[in-house]
Image (tube, rainbow over all chains, first blue to last red; front, top):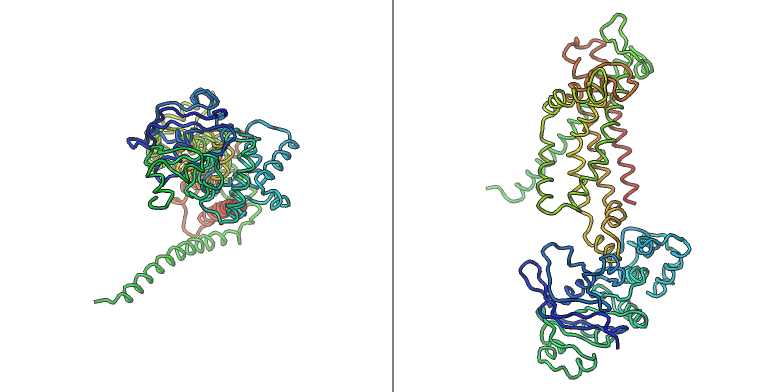
Length: 249
Length: 290
């Protein structure tokens, strides 16, 4: 089992508010790591530390270390890092352009010029996100006209198009209906073969359905991590048990 | 005591009245412009008016050709737009996307303050500082030229362009930027490919308002451009704009005379030009929205 991402003694703050405290965590290659926990528990903050999006806010700071393939993130240039760690956001965020342009946006920015090659990438990515059949006849129409579930799968396709190594899902199904959710989850399990996936979710059942291991975050600290079956059947910590049983959160 | 219904209906009528007043005023202005201006064309052919090279309103026989004035306005406006639009839009990008917060606040309020300077003051400053500088720098007989006017007008259009573009850029959803950045796009790629197109309608509106200010500007151009009613051959020739002509001559005309009506006719031409610009901007905006 190879560790793709390793966090060591990670602390971070927005201004004076501490949002992640003393986090030690490793993510294995080709696994889906589910992160569950109530809101304000630091799970999204952790996710956004991996692709350094937090650093866009100027009052953010952190200490400890975060490594990708054994290299400290600070030593990887930001654009390369974000290409290697793609992200799918909580709300579907299509860019205001056509479906084709949305998916082709990443590869184009990374300097791929050949139209034919981009065509291939677009088709492959849309297929991997199981959206191809629904949109193949209207690639030039605006992405804003797709339904919410389609938009979210478009965002997944867009992330795949830059050929990342890690995919960070930030509550990807929070705005979706059960059928779209099932499609996104299906795609996720399929993608695990090639990618390492971190899934932050408010939906405890979703974590139990798709993730290999699950971590439980509370108030910026990681309470427990383990095989999903263990966490859900015999949690070691009372707080984990309470959250999973739906006593709070 | 008034019942709530009565208060409601009074306020409703007040709001209605102020709305109607605005429309009424605009139509009255248009009506008088038309009445005075159109009277001119019954005595002077519209073709000679637009294409005539000579503006000799007080000679006998008088000539009312405004081609040189149109060219003057065109030179000054185009010159100002070429300078103000790129600089203004880039400044707006700098303020909203690049500058640190402390710099941003100072710059934004500073630029808005610039808009509050009366045009006669800007004209005066231009006359004593810019005009001699232009004369020496380009080695031309007089610094009172279309070029000086363009520079000064660009300076005046800038606050409008910067301030409104900046609002448009800032109102681009933060999530667009995050989405683009998370795909590994650089800051510049995100600005150019995502933020600029998304803010384009607002930026265009800003540019149009800025150009509107330049076309309508009178005092500063009158002081700086040299006021020579001749067709300019280069940007360094003195010119006279349509607005400056109206402002300079309106006080000396006899009410109801041909000269008087001719100035109104110039006003009508200005009105038509502004109308066309607004119309083009509107159609363009609608197309962008789709």
